[in-house]
Length: 368
Image (cartoon, rainbow, N blue to C red; front, top):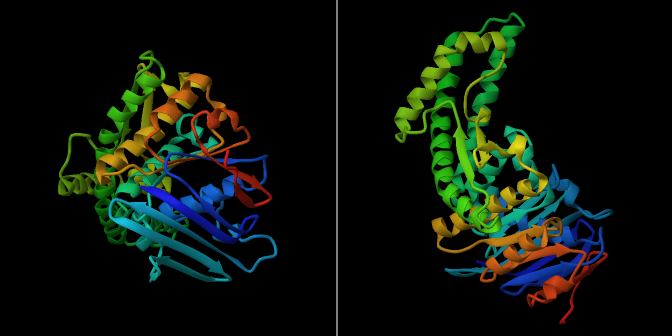
């Protein structure tokens, strides 16, 4: 899969742009705060359905503008396609190949990308929520329906927790109503658990291979799914019954705590290097290597599941890697499309990058 063109109006600091990308390595080059990341942000919206920087889409509207419009033209194994998204006031509009879509769920799965940006280091050094988010986003690239199921799970969780809050205030709550939401939670949880377990099993060997190559065989990564359910359960009905049993048996304990203590919202992905917890014992260089390995492995799983590589988006992160790791990325991904932002250009010129100069929200091919 490759992106051929990105166009935008009124998006962040972009008055209007029309950027052409080539297969292989593309560099968005310029000083800080000129709009390099804005292009990556606009592209990434089409694979995840939301920005990786803004909480609300209204934040993406350029200063003094009424709204924005972004579009990508891409090519995959089935042919050429286009995606569009616009927001003016409260009116949103999404299109695929010129036809209107009902919502973001219909857009997901058409265009796939892997994003690596500085905040991704939190996957290793942050809390469980960061690793759950990594899994949720990565899995949705292969199974677009996953995010809808996770959203439904969170709604059931919120309703169940709301009943616990009523109890804490001394209000009457019918315990059968709690059990009803427990069953809904268990049903959604079974799907989420099985998707996560399968994904981690696919991800682990790729991450292990990549980290070994990056470190010259000195480091070995181990990924362990930390969940309330035994890992050897593969039948959805059995998993659902396990979750439902767990929630029923701990209902009184959760009522006393005032919150749901069990379920996928409390899962974690344990990341170990040579047997040690990477969050506690990995150096900064090792943390970067682990995240890089996970992100490149994410791309391998997408290829495995869909038959083609995604587009790789690297936002000002290669400068944080040492020379050996940078060379690994630039050489190992030579047959894939990469879009990188950087304030430097010399190293990328040696790899024949398509260099696009960025200044004040304007994008101009350098033709070097």
